[in-house]
Length: 263
Image (cartoon, rainbow, N blue to C red; front, top):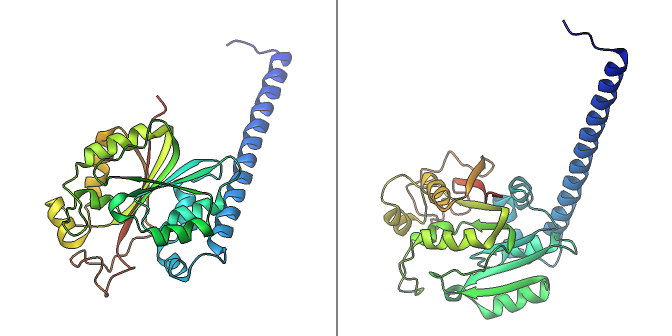
């Protein structure tokens, strides 16, 4: 058996102590950064300039918990994709620091000038970019973080009323993959639908099978990291449309976190 000198043992102890100290320091730093992020998110949600109709959604959407789970950081270049009324963009814009930014990517078909003008006055830190619904092109390596809230299913939807043509989700995700920086996070929240014909499920109920979403993102090159059950509702049968008054705002929803690989 090889003997180890006292000097060597002392050196090993010192090295172990240094590693432990470094690890502890890193953990403390991460904890402090998480606390800062949480404080910023809470302040953004509590901002009194937010309209009442947005505040009413907070209880069911749990924005602070969702963004914390997904890994939002105040210093990120963030995107709210198919932003709608700008609910998530406004909260993120209220939470970013001097190094962060927020882009709202809104399909031309959904753009409402009056609503966006009002949002721009309340949250001047948001940059609005419009694009044709079926032809997302957000550039390359732009975003550290992106969120799609209750909208991914719409990529399987067609509507003459809203002038939404048949869209290829794979092309959308190809463009989204390009737009994310290596290591970038994409959070997806959507209404749970039953397995089967995806386009029919979307047309009938505006829901989507979570397995379809995961398969689509993984096929595009994203890595599935984690799911949260914080918005799940076992009392939702998945057999009624999401706009039905009996279930609206209380649907069973999944929260997925995906990441673009660094290499």
